[in-house]
Image (cartoon, rainbow, N blue to C red):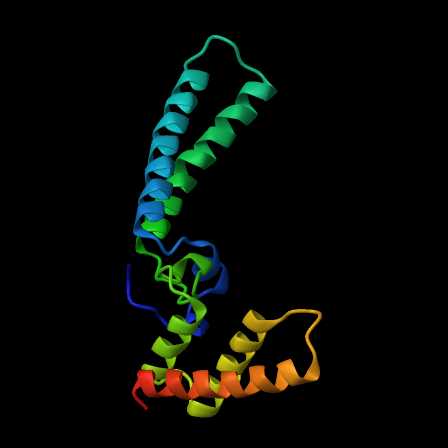
Length: 156
């Protein structure tokens, strides 16, 4: 994949609707190239046919337009820059805490944000509808201890 580019400098539809995966870009470009060749063949078949009329002329015009448009689509799909947007399948199969630690270690989020998100993750994993207040106090103490251990393991 190409390195992420500032999406504000690109035409938004081009960056938004072009796939970031090289495999999908090649597939789109290949389909567009094959479609261009087939539409050129259709134009020659219609024009060289014995029959004529408004329907045949409109079909020839449609396939001629596709013959000119599809190579542009293929070129755009191959050379368009990445959108820079993260996709849901970009998580690398990590658990949420691992992702949070990686982002904190990379400097993407600060300590306060890391602690807040870690508390949210711990609270989400500990949710149970029928626990008493004593259990909630023990849980919050356990979350603080776990959070401190996570901070130590993150190296900051």
